Each structure stands twice: as C-alpha cells, then as structure tokens.
Length: 228
Image (cartoon, rainbow, N blue to C red; front, side):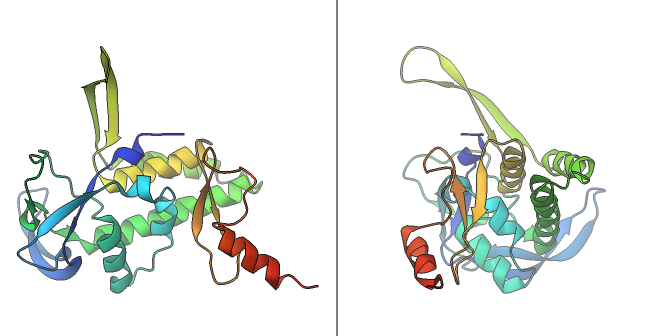
C-alpha cells in the first residue's frame, strides 16, 4: 500500500561520495568542523532517484548497514544522502551541479543506523509475541518522524480537479515513515532465508503474502540444500 514515502526524491552524484572535514554552522550561529559526505567529483552532475520506490525495504537495509565508513559511502552512493533536499525542482533537461548538495555529517548516518536498528529489533520482538517494548517503540517512532519535514501540495490530476500530494522531504524522514508503515501493517518486510542471501524483500500486493524467498533463484537454491 502506498504511504507517500515512495515519492521521496534523492540526488546521486556522478562518482558517488567521499568523506572530508568541512566547516559547518551550528544552531546557535557558531561554527564547527565535522567529517562529512560530499560528492567525490568537484565538477559533475546529480541524477534524481526515488530510492524507496526502487527498494521498498530500504529502512531495513539502512538499519543493517555497518557503521564503517566504506559501508556508509557505498549505501549513500546507491540511494543518496539522508538529509539533503533540493528545494527548487530544476528545469527539465537542465543538469544539476553537485554543488547543489550540502555536506552531510557522517554522524547523522551513525545515529540513524543505530536508531533504526533499535526500533526495527523492537518491532521484530513485538511481532514475534513479546509485547513488552510497545511503549518504547512508540516513542522511538515518534522521535524519528519528528526529526524530519514533510511536503504537502495540491497537484492537478489528469482529469478535472486536484489531489493532495504528500511526501517526506528527506530520505531520513521516508525511512522512518517506512518503518512506521511496517508497524501499522501497511507493508511487510521479510529477510530471505536462502543460503548466502539474507536480502530484505517486500511481501504484499505485488506478491504472494506467503512468499518465503526474495527470488525464484533463492527458492530453488534453498530447496536443493534441504536434506533428503
């Protein structure tokens, strides 16, 4: 079921990202230095992407990401930054320079990986029958959703009239919305049990709800590994 998070848009630079120490403004108007993700190439272009539409279980994938720098750079290079948002949509066909992205502190990734992992583990225990963490999970979801903005606009439909167009403004917000949607029963993520796989995949409308494997290849491989 669509939740709006599928519409979140990120921007991926040619060449991916690297880490550099950058000077950042602090909330009180001061300045500090932090290790940040920045485009690897100084001169290049950005490609738009809708990562949650392409990978419906991305919130689980980010939660499982290693806190090591190389793992974070690889994930950002495939799906975009957590907090970056380009306010004005560029003209069709006009290239978007990498300078449009603001540096993102790697500590943001460390925090979101840690918090998404904790909340996801709580939900797994609750869905397995242990309901003792329900209040804590509710607090974690509320805190995660409160950290990010949402967009709401009236958009013309193909026919007469308008519809409300609602989406998270950043990938970080979308990931928490995906997790909240999973807890609310709007989507169901599962981990593939096939040998040497463990990929997350989505059960639901587009596939059988009793689906056990992420692909036919994994299903066949698991069947062949069963003892005679």
